[in-house]
Every structure is written in structure tokens, then in C-alpha cells.
Amino acid sequence: MYEIRLHSRGGQGGVTAAKLLAQAAFLDGKYATATPLYGAERRGAPVVSFIRIDDEPVRIYSQIRKPDLVIVLDASVMQTVDVMHGIKPDGKVLINSPHKMEFGGHKVYNVDLTGVALSLDLVVAGNPILNTPLLGAVAKMGLVSRESVRKAIAGSFKDKRNADAALKAYEELVL
Image (cartoon, rainbow, N blue to C red; front, top):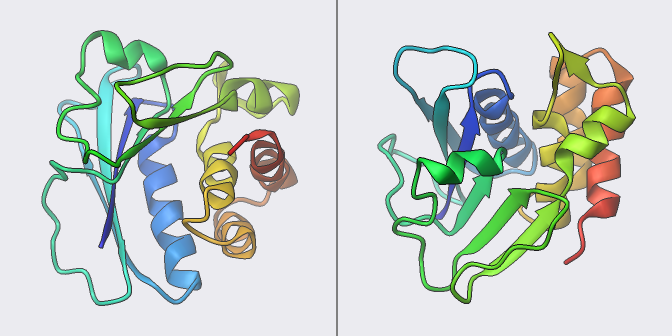
């Protein structure tokens, strides 16, 4: 079972990203779950979502304490939350940042999801939408296929910029 912990802030699309990622995995023939954890929801508050992907049915819906992958949609979350807590020794990190970051020997992938969203004017209520670009980056990492990402996005959003953002992030992520 591959376990992902996604850190975001309310309003960035982290919960939706988790659901879309699980949907993309399902479209690839996998079993998947997406479970959010947040307190009194408000824009800007830290939110964490958990995604499990497996070849067998997933029957666990609890928090993920030892993730294979940690995703950070907003680097400022790291000032208040220990996003690296419990990550497996060979765990990977995907961070929304144009700047290269390092974390104790873990493989870190940086992609400017915010820049991708802004370049396509993919903005709601003044905030860049990060969930659909994130799916493209995750596809580039090989967790789901590009085609399943395209289908998951098309099933949820009519605006073509969402699929364009996923493709652009896919192209920009350097492995």
C-alpha cells in the first residue's frame, strides 16, 4: 500500500486534490481512499488529507503516520506543522515551491504549482487553484497515469485550464 499525506491550507484545494488523486488511481485500476482531517474549517487554516493507493481493497481510513510521500501545497504550513513527522526513511517529498529544498536525505521534488496556476489565470476568490496542477506533478512521479488524471479532472471541472494546469505541472516537474 502506498500512503500519501497532503498538507495544505483551507481554500487551496488540498481536500479536492486528494479526492481527485484517489479517483485517478481508481481509473488506473487501483483501489484508493482519500480522507481529510481538519478542525473548524476556515480559509487559510492548516488542513491535512490522507490518500492510500493499493492493488487490493483499502480498508483503512485512519490518519497516515508513516507516509511514503508527503505533499506540501503551501510551504508556510511548515512553520507550524512538522510535515516530515513519521516519513519513511525512503519517503519522498513534493513541495509547491520554485526553490529547491532539502530534507534530511529524502528525495525532494519542487514544482511551482502556484506559478502554473497564475500563468493560466486559474484563480478563485483571488487564490491560485493548486489541486489540478498537483495532479500533473503526481502523474509525472508515476503514481497515476496522465490519462487517468485527465479523466479525473474532466469529470469534475469543465474549465479546460484545469487540465492545462495539470499538463504544465507535469512538464515542469524535474525528476
